[in-house]
Image (cartoon, rainbow, N blue to C red; front, side):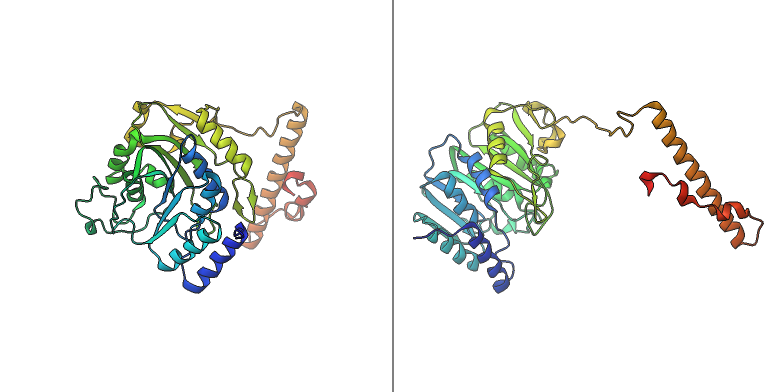
Length: 350
């Protein structure tokens, strides 16, 4: 059976949007899917994979290209998106799969086995109803009603087996907000292994920045790796940033080998992470850079340019004053009024 090409998935998504509104909204592009699949599956024997907000199934389809044969499970609140996800997985030769139409957070499901890998790009800051699941073991602390980002993380970590790995795409705010979200970050903090800032404009629907949060479900006191990949991945195509295969290789290498690169990555002791704030720019030191417009130029050239700027500003000011004095009926200098300022305008201002 022929596999669906990347462009075909995108075309199906656009068609679905037109036919049924926003149910196809949450589509994870191929490059981002492969990046988080590689980060989450590295060094693991994977048999069970979960996406708790699978949308049209793109993350599972592209994740399968990285991970290979496994049992792929997706949860999705939209019935129409579930139908598209099943079609995508089936036509891409993923025979071992299950797509469950449910509200992931408000409709508890019990599986007999936990998962080796969780891959997730949940909808950013959607509303949910914590009161619908009182005393739920997934949630020791409930995420705010108006921001369910970390509730999806709690769900995935609960169903992740010991030693398993998870990779989440989240909005930056979820990593730094106070209140209940800070308490949730405190709970999963021992599982955090790396945090990667990704470039803005990865999605058509939003220009918001994104962060990849990488977990391993075995408590650790090792330092946390913070990586700012926002600049290294800026290969703009059609107004969207695209993470290339070369970018993926580089990011995975930095995370795997825990490399410290000046102005790009840092290893931070857990005791130095205040308020469980996980934004990389809090910990990666960057030098203040100021362009020097006079670099490589002689003193005489610089002085001549400054004099030309000053002369132009002076004559332009006198011309403006003459115009104003004339306008209000006061004496004015005809020479200043008629002076051709454009004749002495510096080249850089033209």
